[in-house]
Image (cartoon, rainbow, N blue to C red; front, side, top):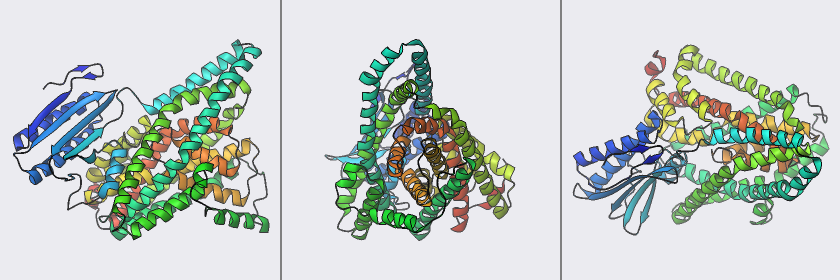
Length: 541
């Protein structure tokens, strides 16, 4: 059946396909045409097409060529969707004996919209892939919301009389702000808890990554904390902060000890009710470790946790969809009541972020260049396409295909490593995001007169590193992180508007720098486990 483009309207495919080699090739070709017609980026298109074809071939090997597959390719509510249904006994074609990554790795890929989700429903094996909405670019929507809010806010401030603005503030804008803050408080706790617990279970149950893979994850987290701490120290100096003596006295040491001890909750429900992020993370780690330790008895419960995490991702996506409207609304409110004057000085934290991120990336490029005898210009040349894709779209998933091609074809990293390290790293290894977050947090503290002490700095660094790794990589979801951090550090909620604007503005650079840092980390990791082809790495494009 021919696919027809009519704007974003695409004629669907609904066919019964025998699993013969010829029919599988025809279906694979139609999937390729469908993905091209919905304007999926080429590298991502190749990956999706061949991952689906490989899954179909596994079904053929398991069920036989006489079996019939039901294939549906359609666009619904702007979201391209591919659904493949195979009747018979339960058999997950996404998990092979050679590369058993498990359900959690599948969730990582599907969370990036780069892999289908498998389900078994009443005698039918179902693979479904839902791509990003054709009519949406979340990053550009967020930037547009900032512009719209700024324009409407300034227009209303200078054109509307004070009495009318006061009425609108009290009857419309203030209630909307209150509702949005309640939504953030209600959703941040469950999303953080489920994300951390699912990650702990997933890492512990991935047999393919072995000891070296778990050491890689540990190194990712340690490096993230170190980058965050260094950025906090440099930013403290560059922002000219001198709100309190940076000396760790007995009182502050007692406060730090109190914070460490306070991460143990009194009960299970209070951390969710109060949105206490440190306690939620502690609970998630303890429960996740318990599920791993008793893996034989908790398989069903782990599946429920993974399914609950999918619900958490859906909730996070819902918050992300609402964010542009609330960004515009809160900017209007802030301009009218004069609470966003600190936006004028945002150029300082933005400039500091760019200087630190460029310096960190150059240092890592220099390290890889020296270790493998590859000129920096060659590394930069290889990385530029994925860097550009991540920057333009402010998204890791938009650059996923370019990233995979870069790592395997141009850096020489074995597919055996990239299969789990890429999605894992793109979710939890976010050094640039942590650098941006801690700088914005320090700027907010200074702007609102919050006293900064050594204990405050330590808590800020730990919370930033933990929460950035815990929250899913969804555009606009950084607000959940800032809501949790600001509440713990005593920063007024009015600072969230400034944090939103800064987070949206820096989102483009953050995505690109995160991706570049991950690529260089994987070069080092692959060499460590003897999965790097250095001849490919040194080859000039």
